[in-house]
Amino acid sequence: MKLKFIAILTVILLLVAMYVPVYADTPIPDPPPGAFHYWVVVLKGVNDIKLVTSNNPITVQANGKQLYIRNCRKYKFVDNNWNYDWESLSVCSVPFEHMYSANHDIAYLNSSEFFFTLPKVSELYLIAKEADFGKIWTIILDGLIPLVGLLILAISFRKGWVFLRSQLTH
Image (cartoon, rainbow, N blue to C red):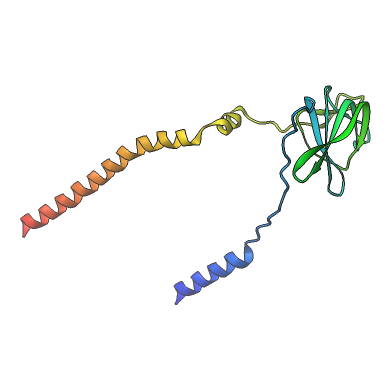
């Protein structure tokens, strides 16, 4: 009776007390072919995501809400693809509400401080990301199969020994 109560209480606590938020996020694709080397993905308004690319590093004006770019190309995010926005200017200024990502550190226009810095990624993470997990599992299984065989052999020997011992003592 006590065991049933604990089991039911555990199930109720797991169902009621476990709050797991789930968020749907739109994956942002890589820049299209022909985009310049430096790029930033920003949100300009509601569902207005822009990719701004440049040959030069992109900076932010002092208020932190406007990009300053020399030699820029803009792309608009439509139907999970980047569409060229037909604006290729020598100098442009792009207002934004939120910055999603960039491929370089973004500094303030006339300062040595940074507005946006890339997350620091360890070298081990980069190597693990490029690793072929099929090959890793093959290596693990190559060593695991003989160990499992030895374990089965030891269990079989032990059971055989117990059987023979019980037959000889009776």
